[in-house]
Length: 132
Image 1 (cartoon, rainbow, N blue to C red):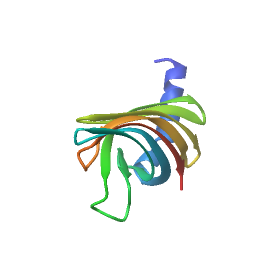
Image 2 (image 1 turned 135 degrees about the vertical axis):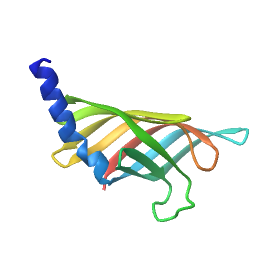
Image 3 (image 1 turned 90 degrees about the vertical axis):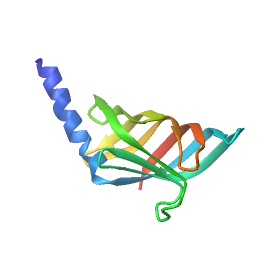
């Protein structure tokens, strides 16, 4: 294994502990909502929690009945010491994005999602998030 590969592996391990520590982000999600035979554009603010190798996207973190979806961490990589890319998926959804980070983990990220939410609607959207 090359020195570069080992270094990248170590840097990735340092960048990802924040994903498992339950960091909260405020995010804007906008795109197209495919819901109950209807199609429409939408834009809203959501809370995203990265933790335990999962990404939770919810309309209201305090309401168990709020519209939400949860995806499982698939892959992550660094493109520099303060940025990288990552992906999450579920049975019928995927998120792929890029992030900026500091010593405590991701500070912001942006990406694209196609996922079915708890209300049965599928969203094809862009997410822009900042750590709270």
